[in-house]
Length: 287
Image (cartoon, rainbow, N blue to C red; front, top):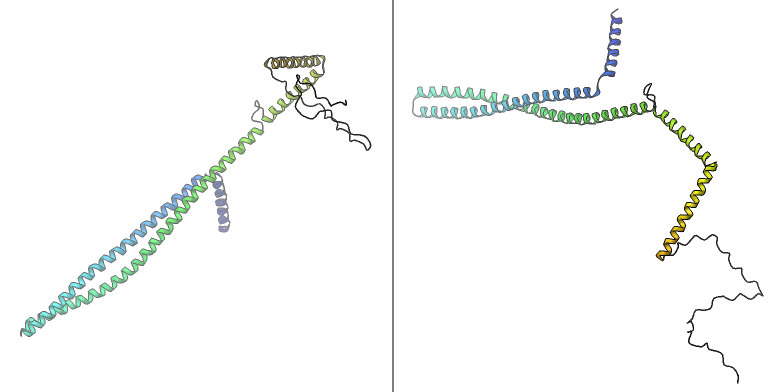
């Protein structure tokens, strides 16, 4: 029974999860993921700040212990010197008191040295922890920047996908029936093509009719009148008429056959033309 209930629960979870993924807005999911990553980064920074604070605190305690150690060393040395002076002066009671004081300073000195060794270990450990925390924060910051860049890329792709979907829906709507009273573009195109074909047919029938031939004759007459008018205007302006395109290419001159004299050129060679006042030169005659 318990196994069946677990299977049913997993099935319902998968089904509900699939439905949720279908209706969930990807933009909101992206923002949720980025917000969660930023919250984790803030917690990591806070933890790293606490680790670094512990390191600074251990360093300050070590520095204060080192100062106390220096002071205890000086006091111990001073007590030993004063005990020696009392012994030289023959003051045994004073010597015993100062010797006891020197021993007390020495015991405190030993305890302080042990404390300093412990503090050094703490400082060393806290320094390693601080370095690791800084590295973790830097790595997580780089990862967060990468996720932010990925968010911009995903949002851009999401906008492109939405635009493509809208364009596809618009094209599909244009190619299908929009409503009962609104024709599609295909129907309008067919109507226009039908009217255009009918107009072309009527035009061909009109061209083959008597009225069409009469119109053609009138157009030709109007064109000839326009050409005559242009020729008249050119002659008044002293302009030459435009050269018309040659109707046909002149045939080539046939080659001379053997035994047949070649035709003389009809054009005379270029030279100075005789003056009207001068008589033509005649060949001399005999006698």
